[in-house]
Length: 356
Ligand SMILES: Nc1ncnc2c1ncn2[C@@H]1O[C@H](COP(=O)(O)OP(=O)(O)OP(=O)(O)O)[C@@H](O)[C@H]1O
Image (tube, rainbow, N blue to C red; front, side):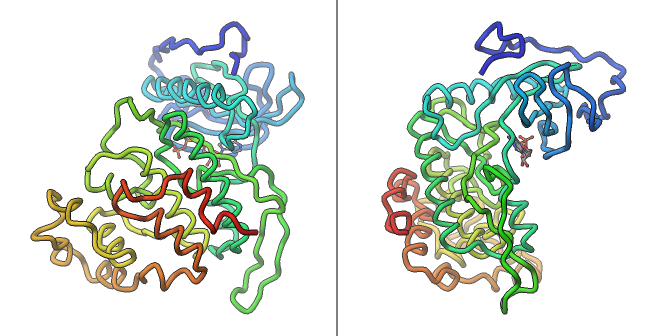
């Protein structure tokens, strides 16, 4: 990575003091108001909005210098987000440094610059995120050969991150992009009224290292987006590398069924669904938990009827997955005990990932 001025390799952590009143080019939350066709410095012309997140907006730009399209993440002009973006850039540098051949499947930072008080990170422009692909397919599942390809690439990227002591902590379909946006369209069949758009090349790239944490650095107590959050995180037992593998397991099941495995927003309900789908949690994990009493989940009393009905409707994993090897891998990824959960490196040797 190099800065726009190409002067130094490492970004400078210069804090921006934003003065009041808010400048016209920002909204009240200090997001940059993107105008299509305008330029961010003389180099980058804004073409379209690609995505929006907590940290800022991601826009597609034409890079006049290198004559190619790029994705520019315009960070909100808020000190806390600016600081976090510098940390993310440090991590992206470490990822790139350990991967000179560029085969890790993780996004690379091309350059960065400051514009109107906003830190702007420049990435190669990739295709749509897998959540958008599933949504546009009206939540129809992916065929198993595509799931196998995604699973291999995810395990490869995560095994690499773990080998450099890094935990992603926020794996989800929104943070996995297709390399390009070429699709072939399968017409509706007896199972669906909607055509299925499948990537011609199912190559993927991992993005969003804003929550990535080195194993020996401070760990915040809660990580991951709710649906992909591991039981050790929910139960506040401490987390490390295995929490990424749990998230991969949840993502792969979502690719197989078309809908999120743990559709909930509450801890007790989340644990209840886990127990319905994967069986009871081990005693050692629940003995100190406020959600359990005498080994029983304290949930029924406080749950409303629709929640009870929903949990009741969830099926055990073996009833959900009909491919034997895939089921075996998923059960190993969704093993409660972190010491027994398969690692990303071990998963790469699993039979499901080693047949054509
Ligand atoms: N390199 C890229 N190429 C194409 N689209 C991208 C790229 N990077 C990000 N996007 C799009 O922008 C969205 C938001 O990006 P990103 O997750 O990095 O932002 P964020 O602010 O950290 O989001 P979150 O709030 O989820 O943490 C992505 O889901 C994706 O749709």
